Length: 342
Image 1 (cartoon, helix red, strand yellow):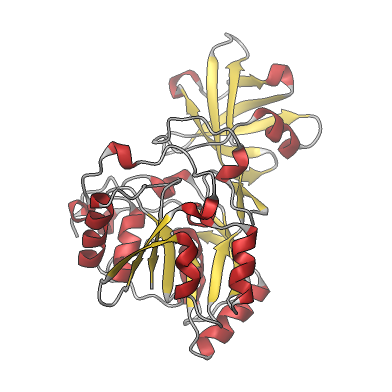
Image 2: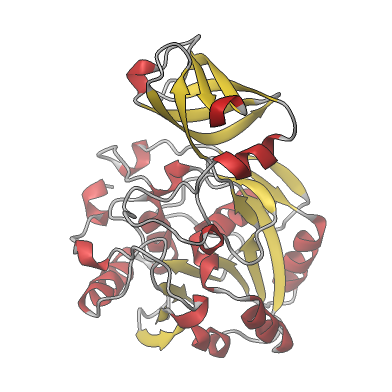
């Protein structure tokens, strides 16, 4: 498949630059994934589309304040370090800017010496492997010195860093938020549970590669980045029982979807308590093993995420839905409006 099939023109004014004051105040475009029929609703109408017995699966990964600004120890030159993936023993895969100034052996100082790192090697994709040195607890120091790694298409500062976290975020490790979950409040989740919806949680630590456009000309030649996931026993039990009884499993976000499908395809349509790394790439032609529906945001042109939703609802249906969303001026990307494929 030609990647250009997943391209579209998006007016820059539709890229949401800030979250709405009320998390649940966004719009909701609902699509019947079988017929392509569209309905324009509000996010708070979601409960009308969910049934008692549905299992709603959410990604509880928490975004790290992963952007650090430091100085080279020898010259004082300003360096930005973005944490991507923990490799253990205080070693991290990172992106650095400007990269040409950071060679193996370079030492970078943060917070007047509260934290420092040394570049150990360069990665194949142009990143850097660094080792941090500090006294105390790393994540507490990171909370003090780091800032939220907002996507490059968001140009405004975020006043409250918790608005780039879901209300149920628990497990530290993401370089970007699982943004479909940003629409929920604790109160709205309680309302869903009161209506008989079962909530289940997975963890997938989101990497920045999730949001990047596919650079290959041919879809099948794209290589996905790898991300760490965990599925707890309770989630496996809830999902397996729902599948056995013909009840629906609905993923909140493409990260939850990719986690469920990674394990479900491996175990014949069932889940197991499991953790590991996934580089699953879902594009049209993929046969879903677990999910029956998906709540998601509106995605970048030519991204793997547009390909994923096209696999679930069909390329033509998604193309028309996005045309409609642009015409009706829905807000796009991380802080934008939501779409329900059901």
